[in-house]
Image (cartoon, rainbow, N blue to C red; front, top):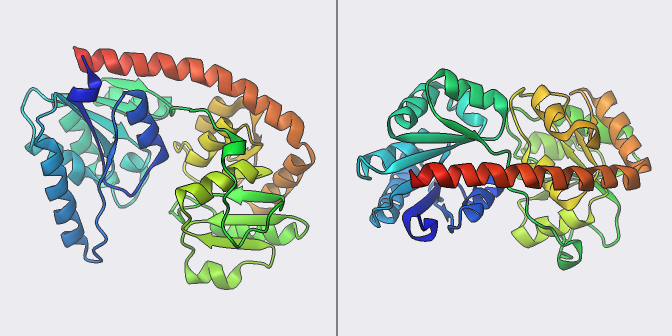
Length: 321
């Protein structure tokens, strides 16, 4: 099967690293479909219409990022019965309070028309229990050339050593504890990306730089320049995009001690509980031991690349059958 002609990738967001890399690994350009309307019904209606236009090409298979369930519903209703639907199921499908109600619908659709791709074994078990065929693909690591990325937000001074904390300010991120950890380490500069709510802006200590939304070029520059990356979550089954990005870049990582994350990163990463004292302690240690930690991440990267290639090959085989 020529996936460049017969597979379509749909994501109802501005951009998502995992979805982009998964589509790229399968040989297709992802369609990131987003509306800027402030009214949710109008936003979803516009995304539905644009998705329907993309599906007019009558692909044999559609890779659909989840959530939201509406994008999968659109693919289900506007493709032929023989079209394979592949659910790129993110943790929010099962854990996000806004969307976990729809997980049974997502699984029922995929059981009938396709299969799932998930980032970890914990979510794979949920799929198998529902009778849905599933492939575990943690993410698709790509080469990252530090020298090719030098643009950083103006708020970050050149040659600054800093802790990079990529955030969505989502339900599972311990924001208050991260801010307190920064307050306890005044010798370090913390760079927090994402649109911070007013409460964070007013309470952030002086050694925290809030960048707001950044361009892809600026974010790549931050990845290239970061001394340490923090990827924290309170959700047990969540794999962290920031963690994958740290692995790809070979950057020292401090993340959360969940089973999913400890299984994936092993001794290549450091682990901090959701408490400020633990985050501050582990980040400080990471700064002091950057070189050996970077070497561990580089070694793990080679192992994970071999695993991901096997997973992508299986996805391609399932699409072809």
